[in-house]
Amino acid sequence: MTAASAGVVVFMVAVAFVLGFRAKTRLDEAALRQLAVNEGDRSAEAVIAANGKAALARLASGKLMVVRVMGADVSARLVAASAARLRLKRDKLSVTFADTGYPPLHMRLSEAPPWVAALAAGEAK
Amino acid sequence: MTAPVMPVAPTYGAHEAPFDVSLIITFAVPAFVLLILLEMIITKVTKKGRYEVTDSATSLSMGLGNRIFGILFGAFAVGAYFWVYEYRLFDLGWTLPVLVACFFAEDLAYYWFHRVAHERRWFWASHVVHHSSQHYNLTTALRQTWTGTLGLSFIFWLPLVYIGFPPLMVLMFSAFSLVYQFWIHTELIDRMGPFEWVMNTPSHHRVHHAINPNYLDANYAGVLIIWDRMFGTFIPERKEEPPRYGIVSQLGTFNPFRVAFHEWIGIWRDVTHAKNAREVLGYMFGPPGWSPDGSRKTSASLKAEWAARQQSSAVPAE
Image 1 (cartoon, one colour):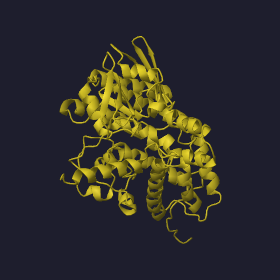
Image 2 (tube, chains in turn brown, cyan):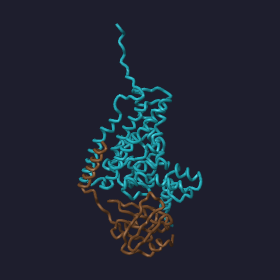
Image 3 (cartoon, helix red, strand yellow):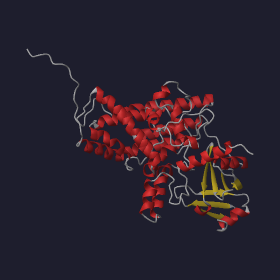
Image 4 (cartoon, chains in turn orange, red):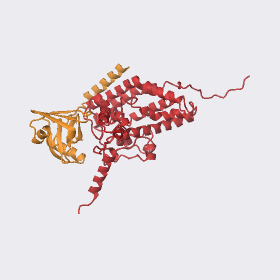
């Protein structure tokens, strides 16, 4: 019964795939600004992953906004800077969160701006 | 000769029903599949509504997991129904008036379950799964919790069997409610006229799934929207404000295991870091987003912030 149900799930996902429901969004500065406004804040500085699938922004309020592309959608979450731990290794930025239910963010940067480096060094929190 | 006997309604024991109640879901599943495929095709052709393959895969996986957890743990809830039924106040039996009363009672129980599931973090930890998609289509209806029984969600229906409604009758109307609520998870159906006065509809339920601040904490109905109208939680959908879906703190993952357990992990983390019993209780049974210092956002604080923004933007500049 369960195996048959799993088969039906696979079939329906295949139909969705064939019908082309797999649009990919790329993040840009304008999208980040709008997301910050939606959260009742303002984007001060932002860094976008080289592949455009993730971004980290520092907002005017001092909070961090973590943004991920979720297929055709964008998922944004605000966290206090003190509730995020940044690690910068050459061009790779990893962010883990005090909220362990929230997935870590990994992104490759073309260039790490100074404010990201400062946060990763434990400054400016 | 004996006197003719008036036909009477057959009586059923506590473990009997006129038909196998589990068949309701069994027969509904093929219809669910067909309707999802139909909705996908209509979405593709008309460009109305939205689908995303990974999101749908996650929703359907959650539905499958819900069935597996139901098989593993469902007997615990059913056992609780039958245990409480042993202490029932009345012997109601399977008669038409009782069926009608049970329909309304079950729907009212669902309303309060659903409302508490949004207002108290313990129950939200299970129910959040259903709201974690940023899409609103028929696959979202199947994005169901794995931890509902373990989280004791079934306690909201125990008063019904304590009154004396047969457990299988309560389960039957719960199954009907579940089936009814499937079709309202769609963006393809607009407002439905007078039907909306009494019944829960796609429009009403879109508002329930929306994260727009002024749509939060509304329309908890299962089948009948009358409960929201009675208890002051009804908010109509407004054309000028299209719903945005998901949860206030978007989950940011399609991983079914993280979807299923993230809020429980959050409760565990908070409780183990709590400084006193008040904090433990607040983290477990306070509103989702509760924190001792008020630094996190609850629905109430989000709505208050939104109202303040609305008010300040309405004040004409001097």
